[in-house]
Length: 359
Image 1 (cartoon, rainbow, N blue to C red):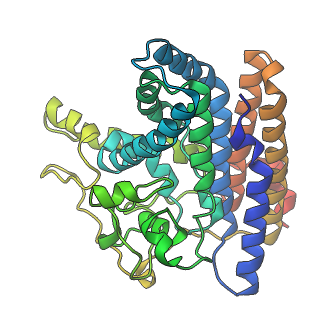
Image 2 (image 1 turned 45 degrees about the horizontal axis):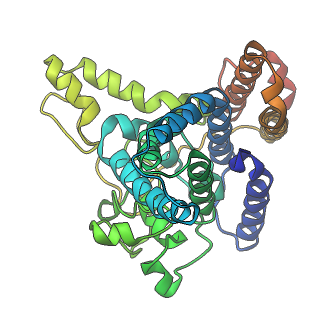
């Protein structure tokens, strides 16, 4: 089946451009270049990683469906698939906020300290693997893999438009479907907003299980423990690196195991650092925003455009390439993403050919 997310890439960038222009016209500080390129770089990293995982994921769903417990009529498979995908998405999403090893992956999506359409593209390379067991349950219940793939992709595509501050509350729809207002709450680190509104398309699950929260006070975005990097490759592993470092301080092997299965809010007496105080107002937040020259910013943006074109080409025609060539191409794009972050952060290790852009 075609990769619906990859096919939607031009529309993603069109939406981001329109939002940026509207925000600029309204003089709203919605976008920062480094943060936005890191967001979109994470999306590129995820899509390219999917070139290697998709075969195993499809094979796993086919195996689950081959051992299905039910055989559904076609129309029923679509209905069960739509409701089922939204239901298991809620529980995967909720657990990803409540279990550390899942949060280490899903937290990538929450790293941005801004909130805009580019944030929708900020995804973890591990998401598909971690969501797979939830989809496999639906395959066992008789939903064919093709339909699961289509419905899951549409569920993700729906969530693109809700990542914006430019759309206010939508009245009665706030009770029924996921909206920009409700999803702003989900991304906020204000204490009253933490771990709320986990629904994908429908909000019925949040109402049923007590996690629905309307937007009331202004949202503060990011992580309670900020990433402080524009590197989209490092962003993918930072959460796991922090868990491993924390586990090294554990006084016993059991406590070390707990690090990966407890919630992100868990605090043990042996933790080496105290918890950071919660942020309740944007005025308290100091966003990660290193400054660099206009030339370097322009050079970074030009390189990013080239990497986007290379990514689209690889997603579209890369299936015909051998694995070594495909792996080398992906590695080069990843290195390009790292280089762009180095340009925007003024890193000393940026290679010499970046020097003209610093004039």
